[in-house]
Amino acid sequence: MKNKTFISSVTFLLLLMLVINNQAWAVDKAQVQAAQVKAAFIYNFVKFVDWPEEKTADVNEPLKIGVFGKNPFENAFEKVKDTKIKGRKVAIKYFQGFEEIEQTGKDKNKHIQKTLKELGQCEVLFVCASEAESFKLIVKPLEQYHVLTISDAPGFLQRGGIINFVMEDKKVRFEINTASAERSKLQIRSKLLRLAKRVVENDKHSALIGREGPIVVAQK
Amino acid sequence: MNKARTTIDWIALVFSSCVFLWSVTSFDVLNNNHQVNREQNLFEMSIEELMEIEVASTSKEKNNIPKTSWIKEPFRHRV
Image 1: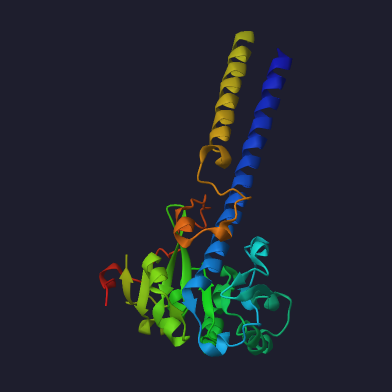
Image 2: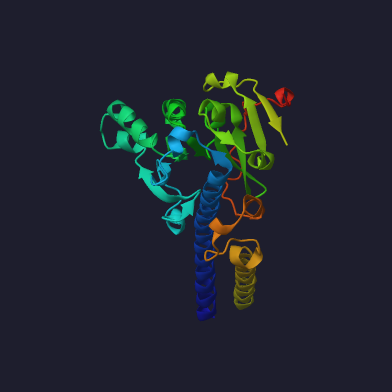
């Protein structure tokens, strides 16, 4: 009888461990999948955006997709490295975020100007959620470099970001701030705008960082 | 005493079976045909196709629009 109880207890514990392990694995897998889909979206966005001539004049220059901050994509972009879009080779660049720099004890302010110039070399820049605190330091100054800024963190559009991912019914959707795109002299094709969940056409109030306020938007 | 122990064993066994079944059904790979196959090349898909992919979002990712949204419903309109 004692044996029976023992076996039951062991079986129960093993099953419990299996469940815990299964759930942890599922969460991890979900994160990777969402990131993979977002990476594919970013790659696709390039086809629907036109940069000013000064940014595209040299066709021998690779088209740079930058990831700024704690990289959520792992090696998802490796598949498209060196492929061609719009006649240009794709290069993927990873940049250490300001938050990471701060953690290493280095002077954040010194790095900002230097980093901004490097980020400005990219055509597309994904600003990771880890850099949410630094959005205002990155996004606005990058307008002069004509960079398509993308993120998946709340409040990215009202801080001047151009495209932001949102989740809806387990599917990846995106919002576009055309006012910010115009300031960056980027032309977003109508097809992409049609597919967007929300299009912000006037973000005058977005300068009010951290404040809730009205914003004129067009929503599907 | 013995009868009580047998009852406890049975309860433990039934509970374990339920936990096992729940574990299997919650397994993402088995219960969701729309899950992304790691081998599938997402980069070859169009935006419309990507929009149809269902990803099992974590609670953190479920909806990253802030609850106290800065866009108030009454202000949402087309210009």
